[in-house]
Length: 66
Image 1 (cartoon, rainbow, N blue to C red):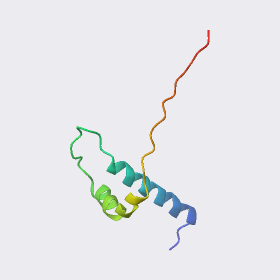
Image 2 (image 1 turned 135 degrees about the horizontal axis):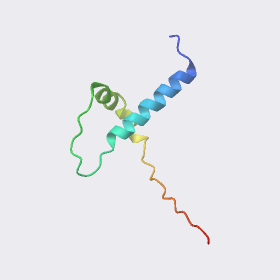
Image 3 (image 1 turned 180 degrees about the horizontal axis):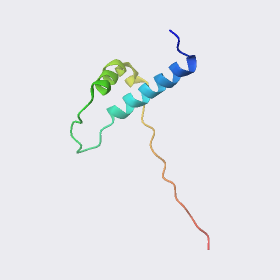
Image 4 (image 1 turned 60 degrees about the vertical axis):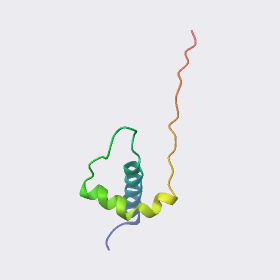
């Protein structure tokens, strides 16, 4: 197909990340308007839902000693 292995891995990772971000909605946001590409990603990558999970953000606390 003329595509490098690394390019395929990058494309797959980008699509997987996009699928995960599209599934997340904040409370009160309502239904977002999805582009055709976003709808395609959600439809074609739904099989990954069983294998993806959200990693909670870490809170960084700065402490200065005077």
